[in-house]
Length: 72
Image 1 (cartoon, helix red, strand yellow):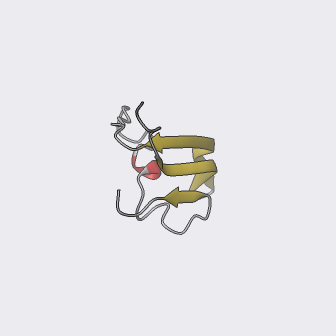
Image 2 (cartoon, rainbow, N blue to C red):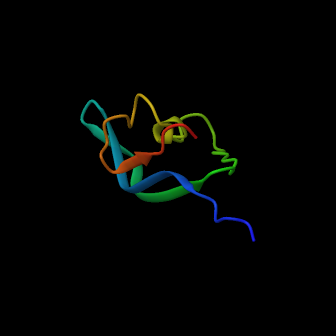
Image 3 (cartoon, rainbow, N blue to C red):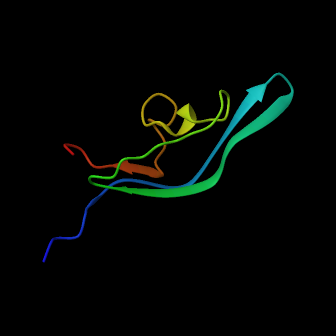
């Protein structure tokens, strides 16, 4: 029996809005996601469709709704 895969990335209720002058552009709306060890994730979409918004790092680094397991 194989062990259950471990969750290595969890995000709950993520919302991200960009402000372009007086216009608010929603990029993420209440996103929930779990990524398990060994999964390969693809985020397809045209330029400007907020693919990079979900990328761990600059955009979401300080968001407390995100948990990333170190060393995986």
